[in-house]
Amino acid sequence: MADVGVQPKHFLSDKVERFTESVIREMTRQAMLYGAVNLAQGFPDFPAPAQIKRAAQEAIAADVNQYAITWGAKNLRNAIARQMKQWQGIEVDPETQITVTCGSTEAMISTLLAVCNKGDEIIILEPFYENYGPDAILSGAKPVFVKLRSPAGADGEWTFDEHELRAAFHNHTKAIILNTPNNPTGKVFTRAELELIRDLCVEFNVLAITDEIYEHIIYDDTQHISIASLEGMAERAVTINGLSKTYSVTGWRVGWAVAPPNVTNAIRKVHDFLTVGAPAPLQEAGAAALSLPPSYYESLATSYCARRDRLIPALTEAGFHCFRPRGAYYVMTDISAFGFPDDVAFTKYLVKEVGVAAVPGSSFYNHPRDGAQQVRFAFCKRADTLDEAGKRLRRLIQLRRQ
Ligand SMILES: Cc1ncc(COP(=O)(O)O)c(C=O)c1O
Image (cartoon, rainbow, N blue to C red; front, side, top):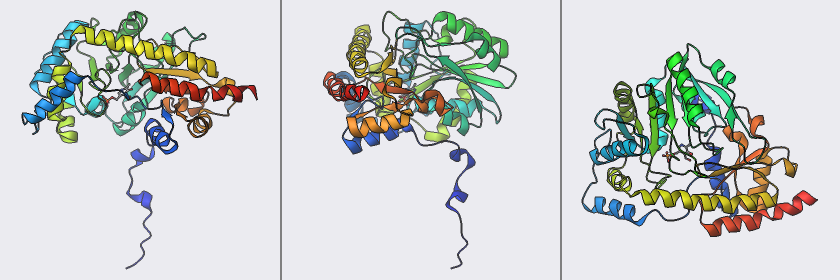
């Protein structure tokens, strides 16, 4: 056979060349390789609530084992609508406004594929959850980044500059992606900030796509506000959420997008051809999960607050400057005290020599240099896991003294 010399690259799309594999998921593989404590990827190492595991087992036993309705089992959609009314005062029609997806990850990409044309701009506040960059590329949109600036002190808030944000909005802007409570910073957007974003969305006729997967993980009397609950936003907000974080079931892959009916129609079409539907028995278990009493959410937030307050002193003692999160289950830190050239070199050292996996800050920024002295730790772990990490991190104290 003739050697036609096909280059492997020939088969690949230009889009896929423009992003790398997830750094977060790669750090989990490194943690396994080196036997490190995994404070990199945001999944709990403790059991999911017994009631909802039972509900999943019962659904399988009752033979809920075939495709659910493409846009989601009725029970789950009804439960989502009920919860949005109860928690945020938002009225949604489960028949025309909710699409259940394979995790909020699929909700985000399906939404972007449903609304973006080539060349549309989408505004992303950075540091950002790393999926949003590839999501923008895959949907043909152009991401425009606006900085959340780190606070001067440990207790301050990450904030954006109002003028910088306004300057990012113009005719080609299709959407802004928000994430509150925020990964990686732990920022919880205030009503005033959301109102300012709302005003820009209305003025420039822009959609707000808001990832609220950490809705119930909030601290220090902070309040989570959905931008969709603000006046004027019902017809221009897509609210994304899921079971993963609230119910400690990241492997179930059940999420959803709540949107105005015309946008929902488009999301449902994309979703249907991407995945057909989310796992049917786990959707039924999801309906049971969303029916847990308010005390469940109170103890979820309290237990995460205790985890946060266990990890931060250990990190501080080891020499990290911690930015105290108000929500979600991550601590963003500054690593300048250790004198490493960058975050990637530092996290490599940390996973191999210290035995703790964390995520290099650069993976949350468009320009790696912006996160070169930052590292993110996840604290969705058992107390003994956090203590073991703390013990290992103490080795860094010597490093700082050398
Ligand atoms: C901000 C944010 N959105 C979405 C996800 C993924 O959610 P899901 O498991 O529902 O796809 C994560 C997971 O870490 C996240 O941090």
